[in-house]
Length: 394
Ligand code: PHE
View 1 (cartoon, rainbow, N blue to C red):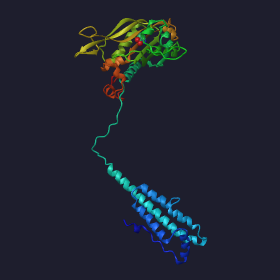
View 2 (spheres, rainbow, N blue to C red; view 1 turned 90 degrees about the vertical axis):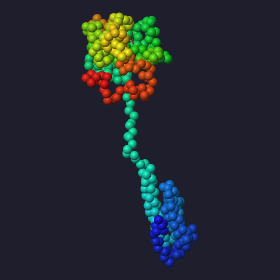
View 3 (cartoon, protein in one colour; view 1 turned 120 degrees about the vertical axis):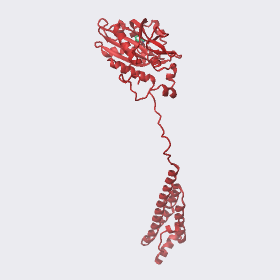
View 4 (cartoon, rainbow, N blue to C red; view 1 turned 135 degrees about the vertical axis):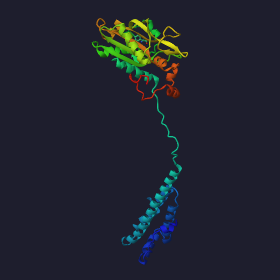
């Protein structure tokens, strides 16, 4: 493009104004300089290749101390009657430069856009990026399954703090200070001075006390309490943090029969098999009397242990899944209930172990490594909500 065509015709200065211009010339603008400067500005504009360069030209010409601004300032030094024609001339150049700047700016912007579009071609045949989606951790899944199964039996979900004082974790559960069970729990104690010794709860059983207190001592209680628990222990089947679910029923006339039926119904729904066989083995827990450990029968199918059936025969056997019993009188009392009027049963069960038995993982530590490959393999889709009708295992 010939930039000269860009220039507007400037009428020659009328003869009678020569003297005026001379005055301006004296102030530093010769006629030749005026034309040369104007041309050089317009040249710089059309040859600018970058928006940044173009802006530099604008500042040099029209900025506060730019050439054209300087000219315009000189006008004030002319006698008033001569100012108009000279300022008209300078203003025309200023407008001309402004238009040229604007035009070049549009050109450069368009060129930049064209270059970007040319560089950003889209290959519509490429497969779309699949955004990474998470999975539901098997522990969360099993907790949802438990909540679903027990909701159907009329149980609410209760929670309690993971940092407990030793009254809730031990004393109220009939484990006095000198009791050897305190040592058996490999308890994590919190450092520092506290009103009562503070522990990371070693089981979910303190929620029994909290649930009874919340119910107020005069209403039946039917809750499960899933959550994190802590013991100083670590190998392939023990991690310092693990998960339990507590179950508690307090009512009038509750018997071992209710306990057994509830556990059988729960385990059949959980393992999604009707041939679940239970064995209640007499045991000891300070907070239940009598106490029973519960085993489920397993069979051997293609060389693998499968929950359901057998128990004793055909190479199968028993697997311990939970601890349970009738709530001890002193625990009922600690919860604010009269043990002569109210009875109940309780059970506690390792959630991680339930998940391992149902879904076939064999190393508990992998549960808490956060390895996405493991989570992809063993995790569940967020859309597969456990329901009793659809199969809690989704
Ligand atoms: N709290 C016991 C444990 O952690 C389990 C349990 C709960 C046993 C409730 C009986 C009743 O081993």
